[in-house]
Amino acid sequence: MGIQDTPRLPFYQETGRECALFETAHAKGLPLLLKGPTGCGKTRFVEHMAARLGKTLHTVACHDDLSAADLIGRYLLKGGETVWVDGPLTRAVREGGICYLDEVVEARKDVTVVLHPLTDTRRTLVIDRTGEELVAPHEFMLVASYNPGYQNVLKRLKPSTRQRFLSLGFDFPQPEAEIAIVSRESGLEAGRVAPLVRLGGAIRRLSGMDLEEGVSTRLLIYAATLMASGMGVMQAIEAAIIEPMTDETDVQRALRDVVATIYG
Image 1 (cartoon, rainbow, N blue to C red):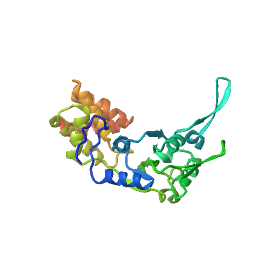
Image 2: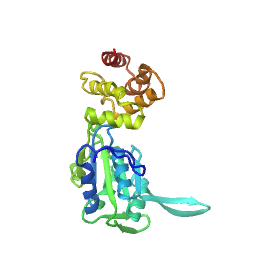
Image 3: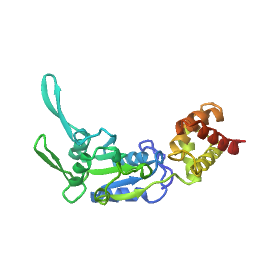
Image 4: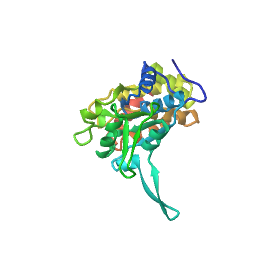
């Protein structure tokens, strides 16, 4: 498919057959799980596909305190009356939209209990508070994502949950593709983006340093955006890459050494 440059579609550059898989999953009513490091394009991919399919997208940024009630809905006091307000998952089911749970492993355990009936042949959502049992229409799709690198004993998707989803692995783009993406998103010419992408690759290959992850494509775009606005290379890299990646002085110094090998 190559680079999408349609004004109505959020920009996304396909790297394999992921768009076809998403379309097939949506057509067949199958849930999809996206796995990959932070900032590699998972959320943009979902936004692109929702727009491409003409579907309303309900995105939920999962966190430690996210409960099933946050997804389903709750009674709220409005104008002196108690009224039921649907949560994003319920709205997506009612409308036949796409519900995207970003970093689903961060949510509380009761969330997965709610998801299970929606990810098998039942395709139902039970709302205990109202006594409703919603059957998801054919157009509804559940998409979730997580970063395998952040998994630990306490935050891990159980096999019983993972095996209810189709799964699609994401990684950082190949250098040529990443140059095109960063240049397109930042407005910085490809020739100036190329060494920035080399820097990103060099940092990702580092070992034995106190870095949870390599630099994301998102941070490369931030650096390129600063450079395109007229900021100096070193200042842009410091603000967009080195400082966001670590607070450790020794690690920052090592990252600056890597920058020096690329930029001289």
